Image 1 (cartoon, rainbow, N blue to C red):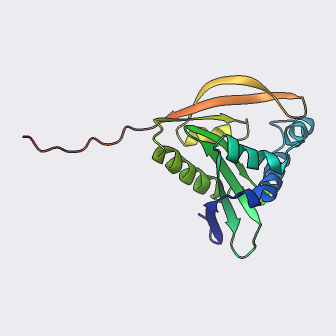
Image 2: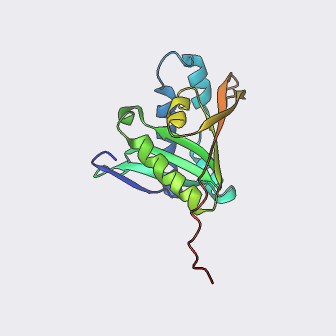
Image 3: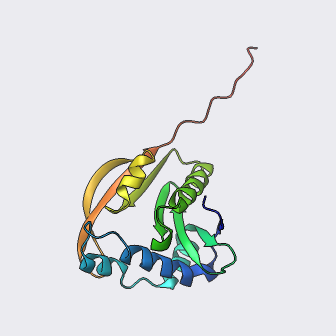
Length: 172
């Protein structure tokens, strides 16, 4: 994890900061994988109430990577429900610095602790190589209709988790 970052659970009060990182991450995606119009269609209409609602009604949980000493300055966030990674978004100023890996490690640990035997996710073309390096495999490519109405490529992926080691038992 990069120096100066703290990973902590998200709270409803973090919703405006999560929204800003979510929008910046999408709009700051590298050129070429999606058009500017597709990225804007994806980022449009995000609202902080959605994160609060997802936490309260869907059981979605959040982890935040926060810049130490700069309260409210988030480098990224992850969110999940049992067996499903819902989101992993990194502010463009923090990409390539280990934030995504640190958040993903913690999210995977939490999903495993909840008893999951596999983790499912939907990846963008931007994130797909990151997930493949972490052992996720492609289930299918599909069209996803963005909040703004344009259709973009999305990739359903999953990772099967190793079975817990069998406890050694003494012969009777």
